[in-house]
Length: 298
Ligand code: UTP
Image (cartoon, rainbow, N blue to C red; front, top):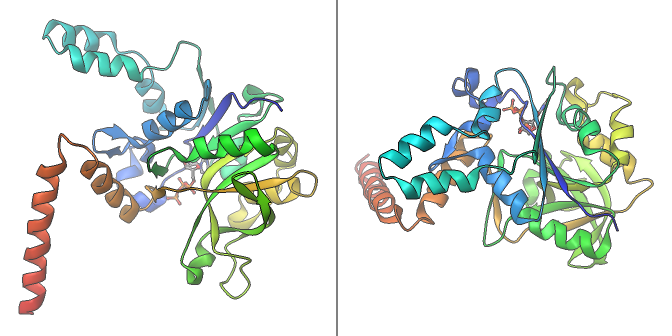
């Protein structure tokens, strides 16, 4: 079985759900506590054993490339002012030289098109795909579980979580077949089915391991919903000739492309940090009792 060495992280979307913040600022650079959203995806990829990360960027996204570059003046200043711990922390975040690539999606024609833009850099090998605005929260990153399943059953892997059965029309939903390794065989994939026809409530939560044949299918440039080149459509085509497996994620994903998910992620990650937990929790408690008192009075 071919090893998964590379991960694609698409960061070229317009982030319209987060306007006006994303008018000049990529949504992937919004911060959860003190790290940009995209850093969480990169950490998760490395935790899962990824060696090389391919970013698919676009106009107004150059700051992402700068973020993953060295900042010698800053490092010198930190060293001179004795802030060695901060300096080392920045050093640790720096990718290995030559272990990142950046390519541009010249027009935001959809996720499928963004993935296709990475085809030459990925080449003829399986790769991981992480949608960075889906931020993984749990003991272990979501991609690590997908890698375990891939190592035991191969093929293509998507990770899933369960949604409210009445909300299947908001997600890409999979049909659940027989057990396979730590996961299950996928019998079908449907984009946003109505609850009455959805094959399950297992939704694809933004982590994939895909075989390179997906690029040939995406290369046909067929438009789907929203006149965009849809990844799900290409996966459905690929599933006619290759197996797809599902791995249930045991943590939870925050959709940081939405305001609610982003705020929830900030609270969750802040509460998980010993250095700031109490100074965040106590004011939240106070705010809650203030709002409860106000609604009781109304
Ligand atoms: P989303 O659909 O959440 O991103 O894509 P979006 O289009 O930026 O969001 P809204 O709906 O307008 O708010 C998931 C990931 O795929 C990337 C996005 O940057 C995001 O990380 N993406 C999406 C691209 O790189 N190119 C695209 O054409 C679309």
